Image (tube, rainbow, N blue to C red):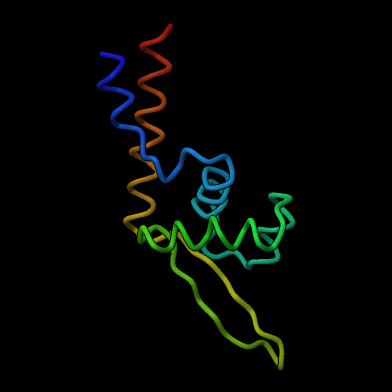
Length: 100
């Protein structure tokens, strides 16, 4: 039974950074790169790498625009990302309940 539960874990969310990114995006409509960086305490490069991986999976949508003359990049969770994250959390919860 444990292997069945482990198989339901989504590898995209095994990283603490990606788990944190998705957690923030699940409770916010959109979050800027700088807000994510500050909230999660990640470096520019580290955050960008994890966001790119989530974007490639189709879990995060990137919106680039200018505010005045400054570029502003915001991120939001896609419907597929929200569902995948919810499924991952449900699998994690089932694993924890089964382990008790």
